[in-house]
Length: 420
Image 1 (cartoon, rainbow, N blue to C red):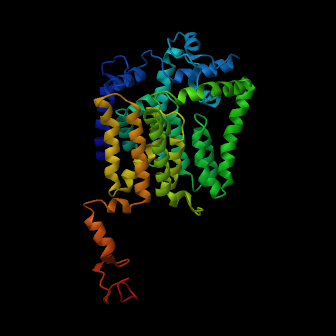
Image 2 (image 1 turned 30 degrees about the vertical axis):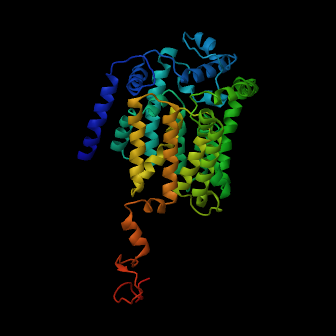
Image 3 (image 1 turned 90 degrees about the horizontal axis):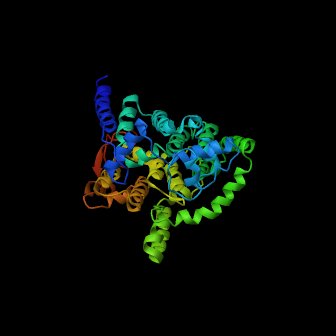
């Protein structure tokens, strides 16, 4: 009970501080992001990205075009939105807003934000955190601009679904496939998580994924069958335009846009280096249960293959951070650095593509370190690990350590006289 209170008190203080923070117009600075959290959770009337998905579903119900230019389209709801392009989201993403689609537009974003915070908490409980930890993490996450902006996006659904899919990956592949399918309704890239199931020939996961998509397709065909072809037309028109935006932090596009030819070469080199250092994951034919870092590898791929990446796009990488903390060792220092960059860097400037790109790189390094722990042991200051590896031998079971001299020792491991 005492530990629970210790976690609840700072959580309540953080949440209360955010809710009473003076609201002001949102720019990209960190304090303005905290104000944005207040505006979202208190229902101050502002236009958010989730409104385009709500509009899309309403348009499908009303037999209208869900892919009108967003500015004129949202103006029909009394929303002043400056965008002059159609929504880039697939029609399956619109289906996810069903819980709030019939609410008044002025409170729909607020209800959605609280629903996302609740779903985030459910995902943490499924993952295995205790109630006190969940409350504290939810409160602390409001200090991270990525979480705040995700409250009015679909990425929290993506995150929670992959947390649930991870939970059941080895025991109930059908359920895991269903959650992967739900995650991929918002963006197609979470379908990458089916690869380890396919390699193991766990077809139930594929069946669960297909069940979700068949139901989604039938719903779209029932209410607005022309929407699918309309989306394909819009995707051809807007995909390149969105990728070439200067605020796009997708690794390949970011390096290519900012550094031109050298950037494209660097992007290819970084990709090849990452695949080489994680080759033990994807090169071998897997058998048996799926390891945590193998799951993290494919979760990471699902994010970095996104053609367009914003600040909220990296929220599904949260499990990598959590698992690195839990694993301990020297990797936890990198996790602390990543958390510091995530929270503190926006306080000294804007949330630029550089910020998102740096975080994406740090998450990738965390995967590499878990797969290649000897990399850390080669850093200066790792003499203890080096001595243990090169000059010491540890007797199994007893844990006794002797110099590796090759001499005989008695009374160590039962049935053996020589240090192994």
